[in-house]
Length: 266
Ligand SMILES: [Mg+2]
Image (cartoon, rainbow, N blue to C red; front, side):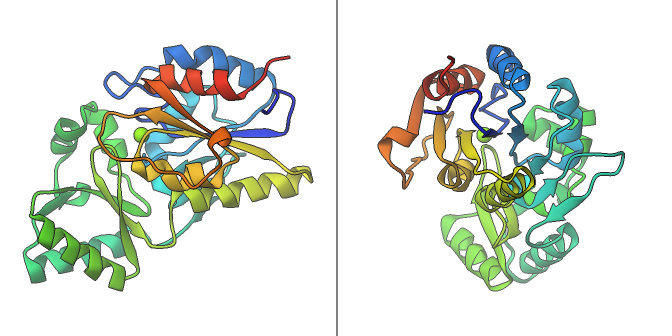
């Protein structure tokens, strides 16, 4: 069980985890955020959101001096300076769009991606404001899409995307198309390694997430908090039971439960 003075890093999903699935509030988690900040423990946002969306949120959450992981691990935004560097894993957005548009033309697949629709449509799908919908549409390395076709076509599209080096991951509301080698898990490992080198000590990692797109992150960390989700997907983890905690509450209340369970306060 890690202590607050251990070299700990916390990786957290946003939607349905730190942020409430319905109203995007994080109030129940604030006490823990303050404690972690006091002990200089980095809280790394690890989300399917875009870097434009996270930058705004990071400020509100007072985490803007820290790196973050966006677009389901396809983009790692490093911290520091006015124009901090970022690290892309997988394919860039234009390439993903080109492949999707081409496949749809050839096979009549029934889907709509963010690149196909208006900000108003994205706002309707997500419940975001129009301003935030626009931020969600500023993409670097992944495309969320709504699938309207049948399952046979879906498997066929999955196979064709794989042949192009792309993969489909399931998020809370959307499917996400991104580079095959990209994912929250890979990004978490990469960033934890940077911390380890910088601090010249082994880091202890803890991750919190509620959806299937969090599984690779939860596998990559030492301690995994599976937050009760608003979905019926299994969340199997290949990990020792004592390093996994499954919450009985949703969203930020589950987030708080997870840290209460794993982090010891001396
Ligand atoms: Mg989530």
